Figure 1 (cartoon, helix red, strand yellow):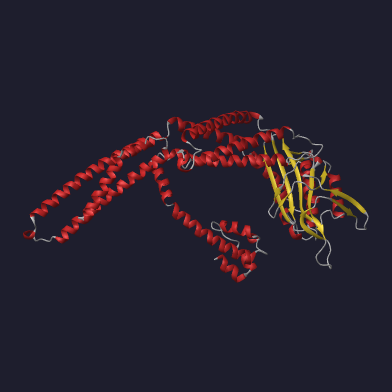
Figure 2: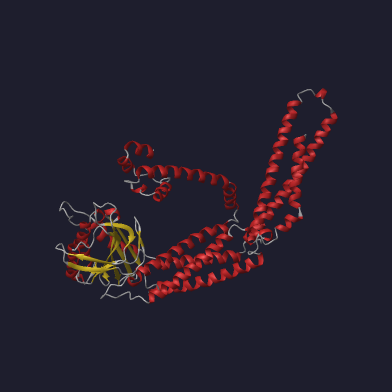
Amino acid sequence: MADEENVTTDVANATNDVTDTSVAEDLHTNDTDSNMEKAIELAVAMEEVVHGDGNTDTTTNKDNESKNPNDDNDNDSEDADNQVEHIKQQTTLMEDMQTTLQQVDEKIDNFRDQKYSRTDCLCFFSFLLIFTTMAVLARGVSDLSFTQTFAIRTSLIERDEFVPWNDVGEKTFADGSTIGDIYLYLRSVAVPFLLNPDDGYRIQKQHSLLGGLRLKQIRMTPSECSKAEFNDCWQDEWFRGTVNYTYPNGSHAASFTYIDSEELDDQSWRGKYGSYPGGGFVVEFGLDRDAAVAAIDFLRDISWIDGGTRFVAMDFNTFNPSSGLHSTARIAWEMPSGSVYPNDEIKTWKFERYAGGDGVALAVFYVLFVIWVIGITAMETSSCWMMGCLKCGKHKGSYWNSKWKALDVANLVIFYLSIALFINNEVYRASVDMYRTDAFVSFRKLQYGLTYESYTTAVNGLLLWIKLFKYLAINKRLRFLFTMLSRSSADILMFVIVLFVFVIAFGTAGFLTFNSDVDDFRSYVFSMSNMVRFTLVDMDYPALTVSARLWGSLFYF
């Protein structure tokens, strides 16, 4: 009887909660997201009470059956009447509860339909379509950018080979491992392929070389060795002075002075083993193959690249008049601790954004994009003012009650950042001679700006498509998914913490064991980031076992 009374009380309380005027008033406030969640939680609670009540009645009936065997002569008629009356009351209360629950479900369905008006949904989907079209047109609808990049990379990086310094076998660009290999690659592969007068200095007979080549190196600052028995030491600091070179007989050969990045129109560059400034010591080769080969031989004779060199790069630019696309390429060699690691970066861009039919369409969608962003900003500002987004503490407004508001604000901030980068790139692009052939013109700064503009566009696209769930949440099934994730967030957080502990533990163990000869554990930061990656992919088992046969095998498994 006590359990039945508790169930009766729970049902009555839930019914009162549903019919409470405060709840009804809350459903009509501006805080739509919060009220939506309250209404759904209330409905779930009522369903639990209903199911719980049914279970209790079943249990009670079974208990009564077990406690009252077939001894009809001993049953008290008054208790039987009370039991029948109690069951009737419970049945009536259950019917009322079911009716009330259906009413709540209808209100929630109506609330879902009214939460976002057709105008809201239409505006969002229109903006999503405009943004996506603009982003695709900005990068190019066709695959010409990829094929143009692939044509240059295949010829210079993946296929062409040169005879190494010891005349044994052949090497590709990726196989280069000595300073001598750098000179041989430049002389045997890069210069003959790029500076080809027979084809009018065109690569693969289509891509015109613009202004020749630029060879740049970055050096470390010379210092005295800590041990008197040794000389020619360098400290870990960029050298920005003048370097004097001599011939093997000791006579003066040439002097090179560091040139700042602003004068070179270059940007800092991130390689695999470090980040390098935009300035450096520069040698430029015009559209003259013989002069370029002679210059490379001269640099080799005076040991232009030596123990103080930390980074060497060869930059060049091409233009394909058929596709209207520019390619900006950098062939690089990183040289930490006397080793040589080849690297490359070849990107293809449509610098003339508004050329052709796609360019006109892009300009139209850019204008629409800006208009939409300004409109969204006005709407959010108005909503913020009316709902008190600047209030805090006890007087906190209802603007921030929605979990989607933070995403909306982040979207707007990145939108304006993207617009600022776009304006900056357009102003700078207008000042660059993108078709000059008689002198080298660096496109590194322009590429740098376009790269970051594409990053912001990519982040905005990701956030916008995630924001689509905000409008799809009116569907019951999708709303169930979000409710499930919300209720399990604490468990998910605990799992992430445990996983993070294991990542730190194994990352530290791997760094302490393999940092000297396994690339994935070459530094503590890379060890941690790679351990996160190893939760999805395999580790390099051969490299681990070569470094430490027994421990490497145990660590892998």
